[in-house]
Amino acid sequence: QSALTQPASMSGSLGESITISCTGSSNDVGRYDFVSWYQQHPGKAPQLIIYEVTKRPSGVSHRFSGSKSGNTASLTISGLQVVDEASYYCTSYTIVKTLVLFGGGTNLTVL
Amino acid sequence: QVQLVQSGPEVKKPGASVTVSCKASGFTFTNYGLNWVRQAPGQGPEWMGWINLFSGNTDSEQKFQGRVTMTRDTSTATAYLRLERLNSDDTAFYYCARDVHPSAASTTGQFDSWGQGTLVTVSS
Image (cartoon, rainbow over all chains, first blue to last red; front, side):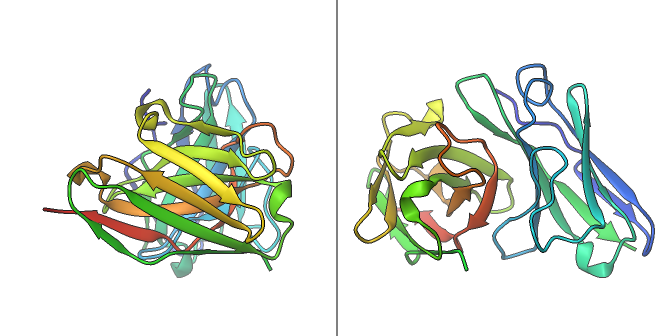
């Protein structure tokens, strides 16, 4: 099964807001609320920033928020900071035997 | 705090097998499920499979079935991933990652703590 679809790259200016989309299907994003987002800096392991579509783990900045509409989930980062420059990946549980799908990733540049 | 510490880098020849370990601390080992995720250089992550650390039950991505074995040792709070019949496409960082939800019957595909990663290089 194909990975979830994310824009390959995005950019935003310091202090602005940006929204990254993650499009799946009625077998995964559209069916389950087990959608999560990860931030990954070069050479580091991914870090969970959103789970169950909208929930933030303890310690994650309130500047990160998640939502979902139909088969598309979204991650919004408000008040962009230099430290937000990283790759972002979404995941979803799926009814297909694959069980877990990752998005292809979005490289975020902060201008 | 929750920690997952993985074994060191490996270099293997095509056709060989590799075992990666993941030692857990800071939480009740048998209350959770543990996932294995790999990431080839410059690529996105790929989910490989999940093990229930209490029962030992596993689920794996279809493409790895027959080549992957996931086990755990509850006495040492360590999980293991074994991948057989390696080829160059298996060159990647391999991560263990704890599932967000304790006592889940299956993976939820959400990972709240990650190991540091183990680089497995397959080269002749």
